[in-house]
Every structure is written in C-alpha cells, then in structure tokens.
Length: 135
Image (cartoon, rainbow, N blue to C red; front, side):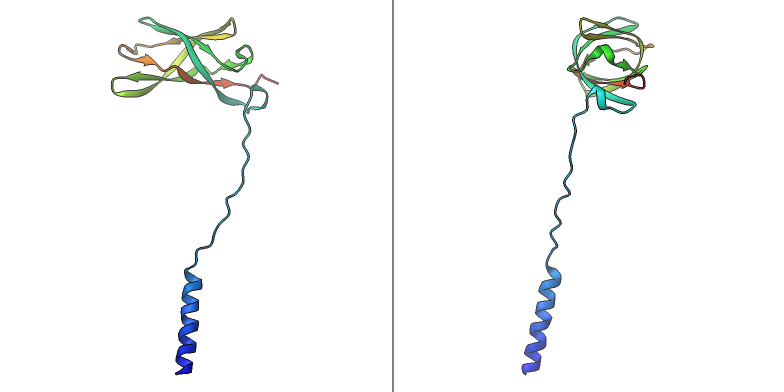
C-alpha cells in the first residue's frame, strides 16, 4: 500500500510539473525615428494636404510636412488615399511635376483618364521619396 501511495505521489508530481507553462520573457527591441539623414535609399515621409485642386486631367496637391521638403525627391509614381461613399480607396498616380513653394511640396499628378468625381483626398498621406542623392 505504501508503494502504491509513493508511486501515485510521484505520478501526480510529474503531471503537475509537466503541465506548468514556461514563461517566455519578451524580447526587448528599440525603435528609432527616421529622419531624412538616416533613411535607406527609398522610404516614405508623412505629409498633410494643405490644398488640392482637381481638373479633368490632373490633380494638383500642396503638401505640408515636418520634414525639410527642399531636400526630398519624390518617386515618379505615388499611391494616394481617397475617401468615397464606400470607404477608403487608394489610387496609383503618375507624378508630372514637383516643386517646393514656401516650404510646401506641390505635386501635379496625371489622372490618365481616372474619374475622381465623388472622391475626396485624405488629409494625411505618405509620399515615397528617393534618397540616393542625399548625403
């Protein structure tokens, strides 16, 4: 009888120890805020829409940013977000021209037959920039 109680005790101890979950400590990580000086070859910057104008063939947008827009070179194709009755939609647009006016970036997009009637440009956007020529 003592042997049966001894083996039952060992058996229950093994069951309880095997059922315990191992606590895994979280892996610490660090983040760094990207600036124009420490980005890779291409990245995106956050901008806000200061003003926009829509014509039949082009979309003219004036962007503000915390970044120095004088030193960035936007990529030739951009993805912009628009709101519509059905929700948020993104469109890939070809950039015709860009220029900096009073610390704001003006970009003119070719609509290439795209009808944006009923769409409203979101106030917050991300612009993809090419930084191969920035030191």
